[in-house]
Amino acid sequence: MKFKTEVFLLALSITLFVVSVIFYGYHGSENLSINWAAYPYRGYALAFVGFGSALMVTASLSYQKRSKNLLQ
Image 1 (cartoon, one colour):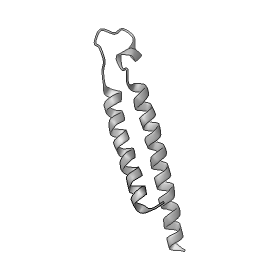
Image 2 (spheres, one colour):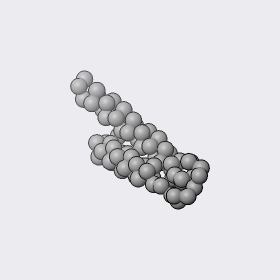
Image 3 (cartoon, one colour):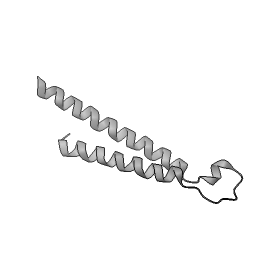
Image 4 (cartoon, helix red, strand yellow):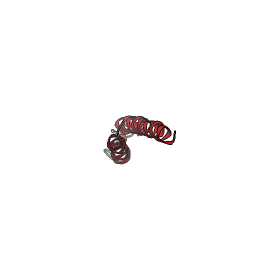
């Protein structure tokens, strides 16, 4: 991958982490007795964290491979 693509993937993963924090902390109705129903977007938040982590790992492995080739 090119350097610009790697930077874009890292920026996208950081954005997904920020959005997941907002989704994870969103508190729905106050009168719900079920704990998981009080936080309706936690599933989305965990999916965003997983996808952001995959993007970050992809970008860092690509950068590591490219920098290793530059040293040789």
